Image 1 (cartoon, rainbow, N blue to C red):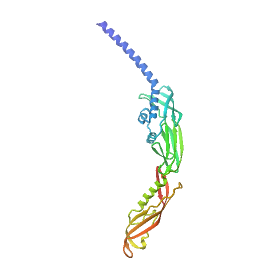
Image 2 (cartoon, helix red, strand yellow):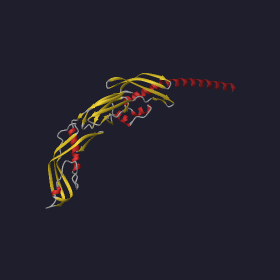
Image 3 (tube, helix red, strand yellow):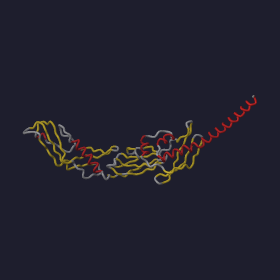
Image 4 (spheres, rainbow, N blue to C red):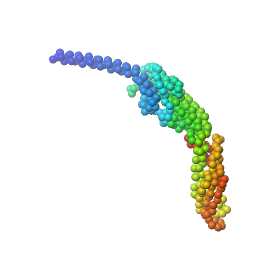
Length: 301
């Protein structure tokens, strides 16, 4: 019996020794292959627009602007790893991909620790844009104030002047890691700009003609009631024709003309009965057009 036990123990020792060799080989192989593996997973996620996987395999968080921008970007195509050079717990990845129809280099680092290998965080580029007129653009799906620098993932970003109802202008920016790009969006009035501004003028006119006990300021009309009333209880309005935006320039001045407005006044009349009506056939509204972020703002004169 003792001999059998001895044989069994010896067999276990041999098995354990073999297992140790397998573990050592596997560990060494993982340390060599994991940097390339994580780089490949990252590049595939960039191709597919898979932001969740990108978060998992890279160090550091992405800003909300970067996430929204990437969601509306044109993603890289045909990514290839050319080389991965590993030095201890650091690796340098040399890759390439097609962006905007051109093969471009993609270089970034990977780092390994007890949690495994990840993209080091030097994979972002910087993108900013300016536009005149206008105060903001969209980068992908992100609305960004003009001249704001956004750290973005490698991709091709459509940069569009906003609001698009009023402004027309677009350029595309191809971004690779550690690249700084500033683009100028050549902007002009959009085809529907007059209609969009007219809608804003109509809303302004509606706000000016709410029933009240006084004549509003900066609305382009007056109601000469003091000649006929000692005091008034209300002024009610009827718009027969809205002031019309016949033309629109980019000089920042807005003129809407040829409006027709009727005002009915009730109160203490100096003579005769009330109410009385007052009509203007040349109602004109003037203001300055400015842009605040992605919004067009009309400031009345």
